[in-house]
Amino acid sequence: MAFPISSAPLIRALENRNYQEPTPVQAAVLDPGATGRDLLVSAQTGSGKTVAFGLAMAADLLGDRETFEPTGAPLALVVAPTRELAMQVQRELMWLYGQTSGRVVACVGGMDPRREQRALAQGAHIVVGTPGRLRDHIERRHLDLSSLRALVLDEADEMLDLGFREDLEFILSGARPERRTLLFSATMPKPIVALARTYQKDALRLELKSDRKGHADIEYRALRVVPREIPHVVVNTLRLIDAPAALVFCNTREAVRHHQALLLERGFSVVALSGELTQNERNHALQALRDGRARVCVATDVAARGIDLPGLDLVIHADFPHDAEALQHRSGRTGRAGRKGVSVLLVPASRRRKAETLFQVANIVPTWAGPPMADEIRKLDQERLIRNPIFTEGQDEEDVQMGQALLAEHSAEAVAAALVQLYRQRLPAAEEVSDPGFKPMRPERERERPDAGRPDQAFSPSFGQATWFVLTIGRNKGADPKWLLPMLCKRGGITREDIGPIRIFERETKVLISDRAAQDFARAVYDTEVQGVRIHPVSGPPERAAKHARRRAETTERPDKPRPRKR
Image 1: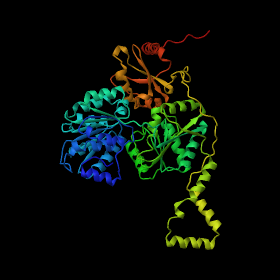
Image 2 (image 1 turned 45 degrees about the horizontal axis):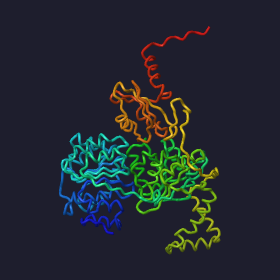
Image 3 (image 1 turned 180 degrees about the vertical axis):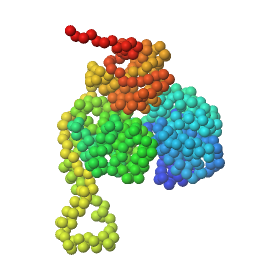
Image 4 (image 1 turned 180 degrees about the horizontal axis):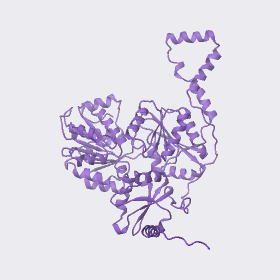
């Protein structure tokens, strides 16, 4: 099935990239019934969405022409949740429209806004950006939306989860009314549907869901591990599968640093992605992965959003994903564009019930096994050396002469042993690990447990151990979860999945933040005040929040009284 498009430059671009036939989402948006209509598309990450909307809006932008005319104001605007995804979209559209004389400009947070301003002033046919930066350019009159013919929201559900609703509504409200609006989202919660009803006109809804279990191109494995041996199992898993590129997921920055240091010490070419890196450092790390100078990336969930790495065949969950959706989103980094991928979850005995629940909710049937053993890896190394293409590829005359010279001076056994030694020297040594030997069990519903650990901690059935934070606003000042939730996401750099119950009292509000995000959240909100609201961790369960607030107020307002001395 060929691509049903008439634009010769785009057809040539697809042929140059060896695109043979459209993916399901590409075929759906190019169907004659979808031509010219607003679209509300439900499609998973990695399904070819970028090329899909790039092709879908081609007729709106180019018409019957093969090249763009000079323009000042952009004809299309693409909004993405993260800078990495926006930059990825820009790269995809640049090659897709490469033969049309089109200019594609990116406007994302963390980059120099003055350079973006100059690029916009020179004229752009397509602008790709993140909500906050795009709104900033619009408010400063650097970005003109009066000529828009197409507006795309990519991964709209994630943008709402990150608290960008206000920015999205600002952009959609200010865009040219006669535009075509294409909204892509992995899920279709009520807020997405409401957004579509408000800002789209008679949108055609396209739901592209796979009827197969999990992801057809991803093999899921669950490995039994001893908790203290998890870093060593990561080493052995990387050695066993030997993927061109691998992604190791951790839940905290500290864990990212720990795993990166261990892998570097073992001889892996590895980079890290976490919230503490500058944008320039992130760009260097991603470029090292793309050009092959690094083969392993250790990252947190937030830092890995939107990245698309060529040859990524392995994902390792060194730390447990927060929920089934996170498991699938992490794993979806691999198994793309017809390639096969492997997703490995490391499961201590204490988390096997949680693991079974995650797999059940995600409709995944994994293969359970013990960790890769050192002897198994050494045997595999031997087989890989024997099958190495260097023995079958043609050698030049100089190589043959050198081989003959070696055999003239040394026995064949000595030459072969030296070759094995050289081969092993470039490989990280396998670690000695043990198999705890437990069997998977039928998942049962998790029951709430009493608070444990620090007094500011609690246990939530949705994401386990968590930390309470207090906001200096309550019912007396109109506190409402409808605006508190996006505010917490935006200020703390977290997602809605990291936020538990929000309990509003008369003068303050308490919110439960998962421990996987609590430390980064605390750093982000530390010593900041926005619209009179401060946020800080507290002690004690939420039912006593008002009582604690009164005590703190009394302590602040009256001088300390000397304690009576014991007689």
